[in-house]
Length: 361
Image (cartoon, rainbow, N blue to C red; front, top):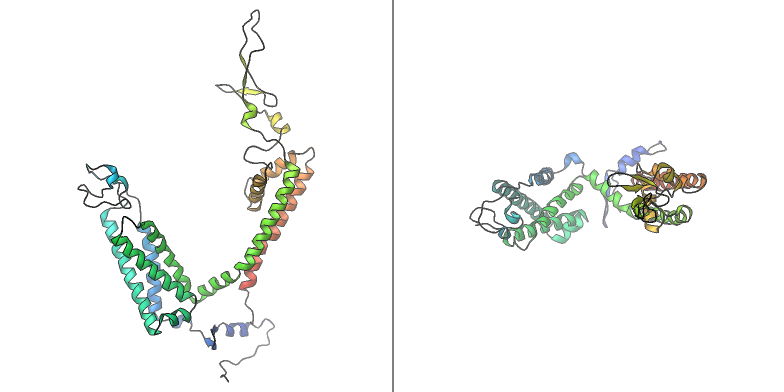
């Protein structure tokens, strides 16, 4: 026996009014549904913490590279941060070069200390209001649990940065500070819904990704059989010294530079052999980096086509020259591009849109 929380009807086939009403409620673990508080009624503490999270993320921009050298008589391995080497830190002053001036470092440290205190107090207030950590974690699972985990790790790494600066890598702490921005997704209801729906669609996205990879593998194996040929390599154009011919009226070898077959254009100083335009057209169109002679290289070329890389038109033109007739290359890449880009890649969008589509359920 429950009570009626909303009454209404709609003659609209799309049921827009019903869908809008359903957005006012969210599922509770075992007790049914409850009305969701509008964003306009969000407690001021949430707004304050939201501003602190944004400011804390923005303060990461003060990190910069100064590069000033400390005028110390100590060796660079001492990592001195001042002339008397009273402070030594390989993180702040690698080989006697300041990453940031002391004033900037102190300013950033004080800001980080203040934000840590604010976030820790906020977490204690929320846990105390629900009487236990377990109740707090269940309140908005897993958002609250993620918040708690980030705050605890931030406090732990901040303490390690203070007392164990030589052992602890400060870069890990800076990276974790950026992770705090994830908490923004747990503060705004609309943003939290978007994140939850994106996570729910991840399984189907993985299936579509597997289909795309499998299709690339099949087409790469087919391309290896169709377009495989010996590519143009620099080893084919190494000049040789001709000792078989002699100077006119002499027995002295001419020792002239001769280019090998299929690479007969001699140019430059020093002289080197290159492919002429006719030889490039008649020879295998692939090179050492773009070819279909191996499975990995074939997959990479097809990946470029799928991503719409600007050079994929060159790959199409080369495939049309790899065989006596251009039709196999043209038909192959038209089929591959149509299936991979217009069908499979668009499946990713359709899967996400289907998950985000509002239903009566």
